[in-house]
Amino acid sequence: MTNKKAFKQACKFIVGGVNSPVRAFSSVGSNPLFIDKGKGAFISDIEGKSYIDFVQSWGPLLFGHCDKDITKACEKALKKGTSFGAPTLLETQLAKLVLENFKHLDKIRFVSSGTEATMSAIRLARGFTQRDKILKFEGCYHGHSDSLLVSAGSGLATFNTPSSLGVLKDLAKHTLVASYNDIKSVEALFDTHKDIACVIIEPIAGNMGLVPAKAKFLENLAELCKKHGTLLIFDEVMSGFRASLKGSFGINGIKADLVTFGKVIGGGLPAAAFAGRAEIMDLLSPLGGVYQAGTLSGNPLAMAAGIASLKKAMKDKMLYTKLGELGARLMKGFKEGANLKNIALQTTCIGSMFGFFFNENEVLNYQDALKSNLKLFAKFHQAMLKKGVYLACSQFEIGFICDKMDKKLIDEVSEKAYESFKSL
Ligand code: PLP
Image (cartoon, rainbow, N blue to C red; front, top):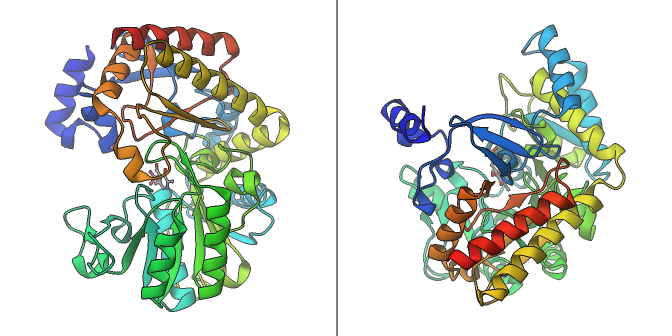
């Protein structure tokens, strides 16, 4: 069957043909590929065409597709049973592995998605502080819970508005929105609102393209939160065990009160988590009054995949250096290729995460990112896809290096990028 036919058929039964909107390829004006299988750095579609995969399931696959150790761990767990809804030793094992890398966090709770992790962390912060308001940043994505689907109003005096139908205006008014990397915009909100329960931020933003927060900005943010008795939540669902073994914390040492995890900690299966100091976490049910639960939370298959993934990441002391070098090499290749064709390209790379903007200027926040040339991105994406390179299908998403890639492969992709820039 062709991808086109498969999509048409899917559209009959599945809303928009996809189970998550970004998969629809609509921002690059084409149809999605239907994937048959993956191996290492490669995926192949149902037409039998192979692609170098820089999406890696949107981040979880640090070791590529069908890694033998992760597969083995899953097979072992699978044979014992897929789910019990009761504690297993695997949960404690993965908890220890995550917390070992974040010594300032005492306790963790596992959930099944990043959305659940951030939603629950926010409820916990509201319960702990007994305050209603939360503060987020324009361009950061933390999943699709109601409180987080909110856009900034036109000024401080106006209420923010839901960014999705179905989100209550009454709820949206409790979500404040500041500008990323701009501490003054945060100070202004703290001056006006005395009841902010938490500030949630992607310390390395990967949902407006790759935009790392400046260390000084994060430092000031942590100080402001401390001063106002507001909890700071670092959403490391994407950057945890990706940007470095210890995520953003491993890069600048700045500590948050609560941290959310996802993607890599599930090794490609549905697992996510939130963690924090004991005095905060112990407010969760069954110890405390903040309710949170999940039938499949801590699922043994997901725990087994996560354990195998983190053990591998922690064992190879050179892993993140190696992945970072490959990412930097790829971005250097892209930049040089674009420059040769007089195309303005901004590139960034942190650990195994990379991003590029068709933009004249450095991107520091969402408004900067919006100035990127989306038409050029769409053309580039299509050209690369034709050459067998599978990149995230939006200018506002990022790319991921996996451990199965090497310099030779990266240089091949840089060459294809140059050819693609030439064709724009
Ligand atoms: N937080 C961040 C930073 C994310 O990138 C994502 C998803 O991409 C989420 C939360 C939501 O995670 P999930 O898609 O597992 O619900």
